[in-house]
Length: 150
Image (cartoon, rainbow, N blue to C red):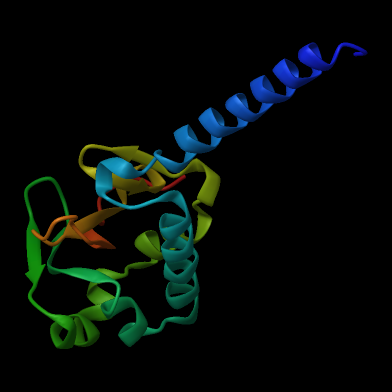
């Protein structure tokens, strides 16, 4: 491209496309109140603590009260961190553990209900303050032990 005007226009178009692509990507998880980078950091840590069987680490990543669905009709509630540490083996069954560990970060699915891990075996959701602007933090919002993990 010898013409400086064409070169400038092409450069501006490339910058515009890059900005739009970056902005769209950065908004992927906005429905749960957090940016992509926060989701990815949280999910990596979730996999680390579950792989290690770190009860306290997992308990710190939960939005309480935690609903644990054993089936479509049976559930129990974990009220707080101390309760979860005691009931960790009841909550993180081998199926739930497998679902968390096999999930690929790039394949996390976001809906209005939150971010589904392995088809919904675990749901992540942002909890936001009522301040302006709101401050949101991500946490495990429910566990579905009856979801089939492949």
